[in-house]
Image 1 (cartoon, rainbow, N blue to C red):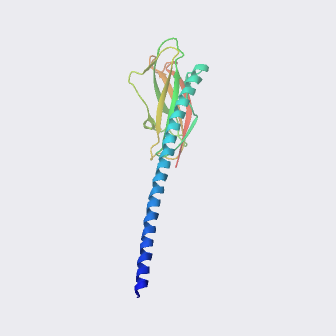
Image 2 (image 1 turned 90 degrees about the vertical axis):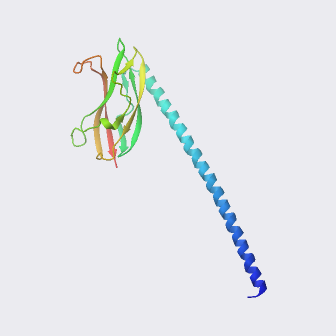
Image 3 (image 1 turned 90 degrees about the horizontal axis):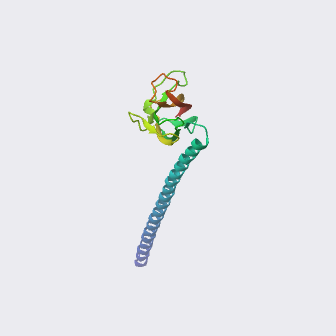
Length: 188
């Protein structure tokens, strides 16, 4: 190899190395900008979700105030994947002439094969032993998390959401303050 060719190869190698470094720096910069952009998007989604949740709570309270309902349950069908979860907000209004001491419960009716099933572990919410106290003409919003176990077979499950008046003995006609039928459809 001649001396001029050797210098040309060294110069070409140096240019390629500089270009590689510039490309790596640009790639890292673009990656950082992209990650920042995605972080902002997800941050905005979280804020929007919280705003929507507050709007739903206000809508439930308005529904209870203006309507003649004792309870406001947002859905008649909830679709969830196995292992999935969601949060529901339900409203309870005291339409009695005295303070209401109540508990909420979810009672499984039947699954897609018309068989009873165990669903108590699906629901997560505050469960005070001596009940919730609701003054006359007041309303409460309760948040309930539904967690579907991965072991549950896919299908449709019928349940009732019951608000029970614990000041009245079980079996008495006024024991169930109000109730709402609904379905959970498990997919996946």
